[in-house]
Image (cartoon, rainbow, N blue to C red; front, side, top):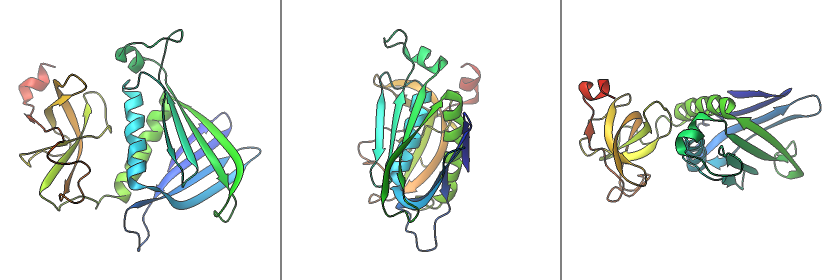
Length: 237
């Protein structure tokens, strides 16, 4: 359960286990806000699995300094919008290294629902999370997401997709295809990353097998793992 305390407001957002009849397309989530004035709780399947993974991916990109400008995503069915604000200095963009080293902000805007969950109330509650809160929030949501969808894309299919993060980061899940089919979670591998396709060593967050029909990306177009990193290469970097 991802719970953040924000100036006497407790905010909880959890990815719950799927129901017996769930097909895995929608995530079952719980949203709760509690303070002196409001006691709000909503449970439902209104955010798709892909939308939730996009949110996770975006949080880790924000933390890694990948966004030079404000970035926004929204989940209309859930009545949820998220704005991400990278670090800037005197209103000007800074380098990725400076963005990584300084604070960033994520604004979560929740359109409140009535108790039955069928209708919106018209009120919007906004929460502001800073870097430390975002890191903890993303970590807990990733754990719950992986637990809820652990069987999706695992063990079946001819294509092995590898989710990776730049070194010193975890949970980004930039997806690559592993032609060798031998990479495992926890490995370090060489890939071409970024706009300039720079060859670098990255950490493997997780792996999933897919068929052509349910692969997250077109296997013929996605970037590929070049090879595993050796122990000597890891010592030198």
